[in-house]
Length: 123
Image (cartoon, rainbow, N blue to C red; front, side, top):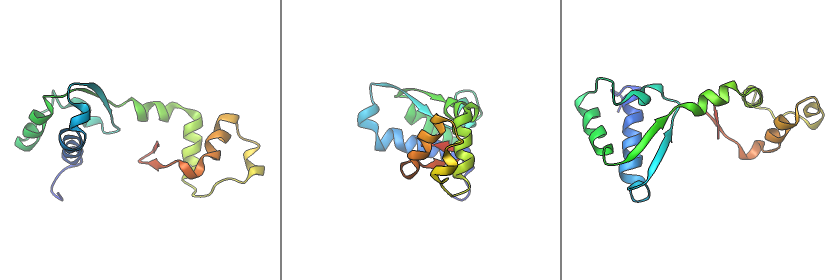
């Protein structure tokens, strides 16, 4: 696994998740895979290695599309951007500090313990 590029690792994870982990739920359904990995969006047109071609052939029986909009939307959203900025300080603002924030940001801050930020995405 150490020799795989990030694109190969992402494709391997996608292949495993779709063809093994969630196969029974996804087979016969149209679904969208949301990703922050731009190269995955161009699987059909990029030059692939033998491993990647084999993994892509396993995915061919599924009806899905890959969408990168999640991170793009969150990056443009000022409330989410401000929340991520605060999150990265690793300290939840005190109530007195929260008074100066907009209501949507305060709503996010109230859910501090239930929210997770992974690779710049709010989950």
